Image (cartoon, rainbow, N blue to C red; front, top):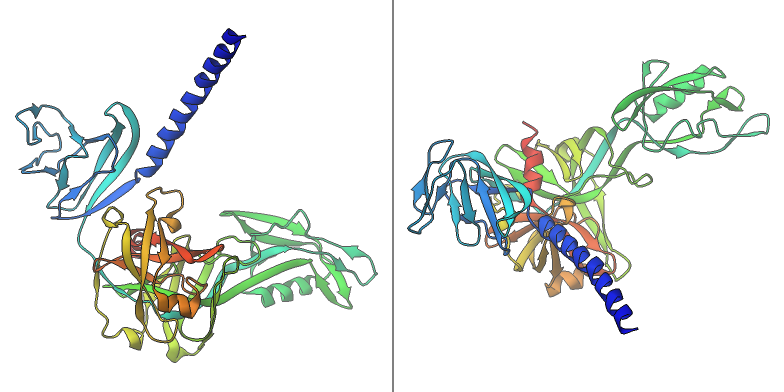
Length: 439
C-alpha cells in the first residue's frame, strides 16, 4: 500500500511541477513589455526585477563606452573582461543604457541567460511635452456607414410576422449602399428602402473590414411603407475628459474607445466633434454601482473644441480648432514612459465640480503586458475631497490625466464596479502613439 501511495505521489509531482514551471514562465514573459521607449540622452536601467539577460543587436552606450558601428566588436561592462562579439550580452540587473541619438534597437531577453523569453523593441526618442487637460468635453461622432445593431420581427400589412434580415444582416455590420447608391445616414437608408417597394434590395455591407453585398426583400408594413426589420444607428454622443494637447495642437481623450452601447463593438467613425461641456450633477459611485458625471453639451460652433479623426481602443484623437479658455495658460508637462512609473503617490486631474484641480491617488499595480493597454495602471483614490464629491472614479472621468513626479504618465480609463475608489489607467505613451499616427 505504501509503495502505491509513493508512486501516486511521484506521478502527481511529475504532472504538477512542470505545470507550475510552465505557468511561472508565461507569467514572467507577460511581465516584460513588448517595447520600451527611452529619452535620448538619459540613462535607463532596464531592470525587470528578474534574473534576465539581454542581447542587443545594434549600437548603444553602456556605462562609459559608446559603440558607433552596426556590429559591435567590443564592449566594456565595467569589468576587466571584454566581450568580442557581433552582439552585446548584458546582465540587465547591473547595466544602464543610453543613446545620444534617436533610433530603434532589438533586445532579446533570456531567463537565467538560457531560456528565451521575448524580443523587446528598445526605442530612443526625443523628449516630449504635452498640456495635461482634465476638462469635461462633449463628444459627438457619426458612423462610417449606418451601423446595424440587430434584427427584429415586424408585422406585415397582411397580418403575418416577418424577420427579413435574420441570419443575413449581422450586428456590427455597416450599411454603405442600397442598390449601389451610397447611404448618407439612417434617414437616407429608410427612404431608399421605402422607394424600392417589394423589390429585393442589394445592401452594400462592410463587415469586419470586408466589403460584401447581401440581398434582402422588404416587407410592406403599412400602405406604401416598407421595412427590413433592421435596427440601426448612425451617431452617438456622450461626456468624457480631455487628456492632453500636444505641441502640434493634436489631442487625445478618453483613453479607451467609443463602443456601441448595444453591440459593445468599437464604432467605426466617419466624422466627429469635441464640444465644451458643463457638468450639471454627479451621481456618486458605490460598490457594485458605478456613478457618472451628468452634463450639458453645447452643440454650437462657438463651443467646438476640435475635430475627432480617430476612434481606437486606446481613445479618441484629432485636432484642436479652438483652445479651451481654461487651458490658455496651462503649463506643459514632460511625458514619462512606463518603466519610469513607480508604485505609490500620484495625482489625477479633473473638473468634477467645475474647477480644474489635481486629486491624490495611489498606484498599486503596474502591468507591462501589451494584452490590455487600457489597464496598464491600477490605482486607488486616496483624496478625501474626491471621495466625498464622487465616491471615487465615475463614468465621464475617463481620460483624466494621471501625473507623477511632475510628469504625465497616463489617463484614467475604467472603474472597478465592485469598488468605486479603484480604477485603471492607460500608459500615456500608448495614447501618444495614436496621436503621432495622425501626421
